[in-house]
Length: 510
Image (cartoon, rainbow, N blue to C red; front, side):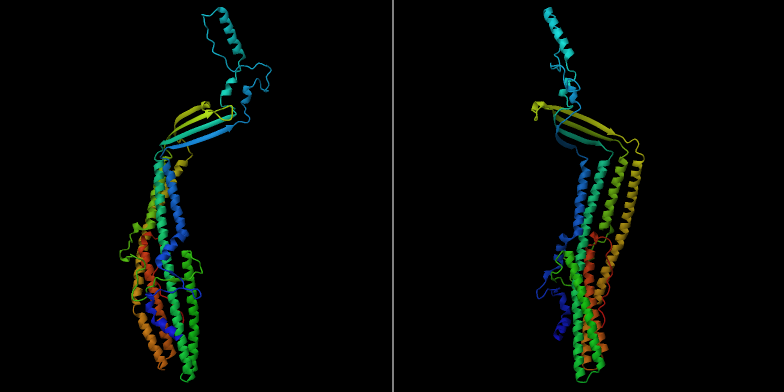
């Protein structure tokens, strides 16, 4: 136990350069995991990013829908109709009852009569009498057999063409609004990806910090165990009173709940990290990116230059989305105004229709049907609907502009808050430089003085508590610097809020 305590205390400065062993299952090493790999694993596993990506696809589809009205529309159709019973079937029968009293079939049409004065008078009279007889016996409804009414079989193959010629600017305004909505969705996707990167970074360094705090708590417990062993030995030889022994036992026992609490916090931090990465909750991990609580703070991500971080309000994702929203609302106002203007539309329909007596038609059975129309629609009275649409669109545009201004102000404040958080974290890190070594040296002196009998357990306990606080504050400062730098590097794409000033860590009772 003493050897382990010495190693933990003496090797605290080396933890920044050595891979940190995270929670491990019984005797088996955990899966090595760096911060860069954690960010890479989190992106396909994030439901929030997936929802934002679906929003981009939806916006692209809506943009295509809005733009499609600018182009001609051509559709084809094919239909077959079988008539089982028709109201026109009686027109082709001899009477309404469907039975004929004449055994001679009445003709449905007569040949055109042309008088020929060169023929003999007898032939001319015969041809005239035949024409009169045919005309008086012809079926007046026989021609309906060739019309589409009531035909048993009907085939229809057609093409329909339409083109908007004038819509008062409505279609182009819809396209502009849809394009702005698509750009806004793309900004939202980028924002969610940046927020995920920050969340993973925070969870990763929280887990690394929890490992460090557990090591500090274990070291303090080992120190308390060593003090208790020395006190027991001094008590046995008569050099220490019973009060010192009881005080050493209480100090050791009070440190055990702190160790339990730190381990529980570590378990929670690792569960949060696994949940973000969509890893099995029981999978052991070995975090390889150091916390950086040694001599210097390592760069949290490659090519992270916080000194040149972009903090301009106009470049923030929330401001860009608000600006696109203004563009979309301007397009919707144009659409509302276009509702009062006339629309002009060109349409054409071409069809080939057949009414065969048998099941399948021949090519000669088809007839052509082709129409072209130019239609104009003018709204005359809508009961106030168009005026209401314009008022709603103007109100939405005013609201979008105010939200844009509000976003600019909030983005500027958030940028200053992020810079202040970074500066405070670096200041806390600089202030903690050398404190751990001084506290470790003070504890070594206090422990030596206690062994020699020239100091009390109170002095030793104070030195131990100061050492715990110094190590914990150093680790917390390193974590805050790492997170603040990452947040500042991702600032243009991050949503508003989330920056907080660093707080000191409480290590627990003596």
